[in-house]
Length: 364
Image 1 (cartoon, one colour):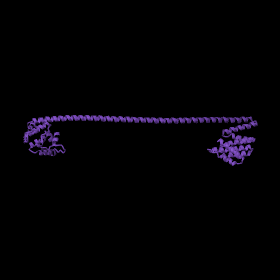
Image 2 (cartoon, helix red, strand yellow):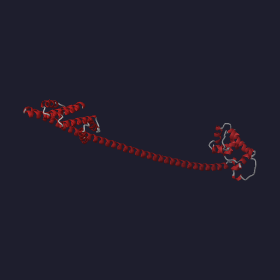
Image 3 (cartoon, helix red, strand yellow):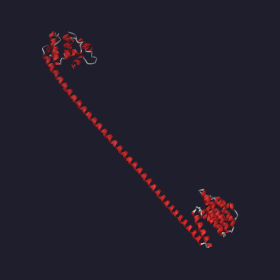
Image 4 (cartoon, helix red, strand yellow):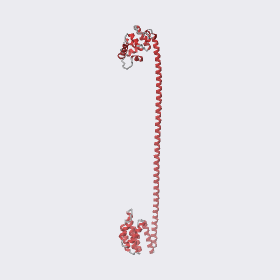
């Protein structure tokens, strides 16, 4: 900015010498600035240079005119400077009373630099007049203001250092806060990862325990099924053995020896009528009841529609008397025997399944 203003001043001098003031002003204000304050400083600088130019030409009236123009154009904060400058103009033309008046006004400015310069100018005037007391007083005021300004500068420097340190502290605090947030995020992420790992571990253990439980249950079920199968096989074997013993017992009963299918010695005999008396029928029933835990009584209790003859017939079927022997006993054809079995199963026993009467009575 200073270099640009210096170049414009050279342009101003050359243009002013050619009496092209408007072009000089245009050149000055063509300099780019950032704020209104800088624009006012441009005008102040321009007026000051024009006033200095007038002073070099001993055009004092022109110099005062330019200073007045600067005073009018700038804002209130710049007026003390122009008062001081006006005092300098009067001082340079040896109008000391007017210069003292303007220096006294500038000495009471709120701008410390202007006030210090004004008190020094007053001290010079008093020294010229030999007023040593006033010289001392003015010098003392200038020194006091200078010390105050130095203190302000130091205070400003201290304030600047304080602000700088405060900014550094704030930056450090922000960095620490950022680091704390990062640490918190890392900690949270680590905790989350640990929780996920624990959940996966728990889930896998649970699945493993569930598989082990299912395997144990399956093993127990297989063992139970094997046990049941073994017991069933043993029971079947016992039943077969029991059936063999019963058949052997039946063969030893006199009345049952008349039936060829129950008597090994008579199995090859041809067809002949087998006649059974009432006593023999009753003996057969009692023998079957003794062998099969009251078979006829249980059968009659469960199926009350059965007649006594039906009971006798069921007892013969229970001990595996063949259809041929049943045909010989009842003097009917084998087909009629089959029909009789079917009729008893459907009408008397009420069985609807596909099992035959022989199978039903064996399991009863």
